[in-house]
Amino acid sequence: MSGHTPGEWDWGPASGTQDALMRPARVFVVAGGTSRDIAEVGLDRIGEANANARLIAAAPEMLGALESLALMAETDPELSDMARIARAAIAKAEGRQP
Image (cartoon, rainbow, N blue to C red; front, side, top):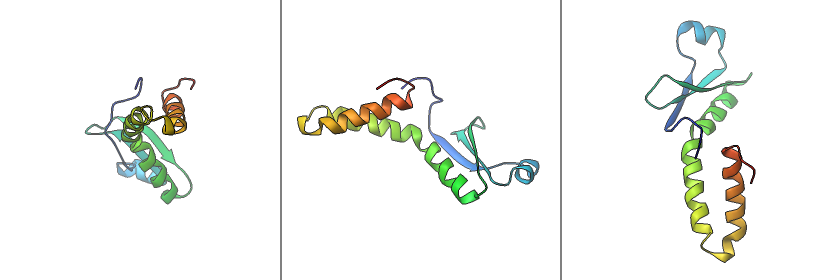
């Protein structure tokens, strides 16, 4: 992994009365244990914004799990396609070419 803010990340609604009034359909992803914003997610539909924020907040754990699965898949010739797909997804997440 390279370049991204270390996890764990969390998500929640806009904080403060002014933020909540000005941006009612905004959800923030923050670095766990800090108030450092990772992303601001906003759509017309708050349910969809919440779902997107949960997905973004889970990204560091999903990337770590995918890296572990790729390592295991690379040891089994029958899983070579799975390993290739996993490595391509990891490269995309890290801003590299597969």
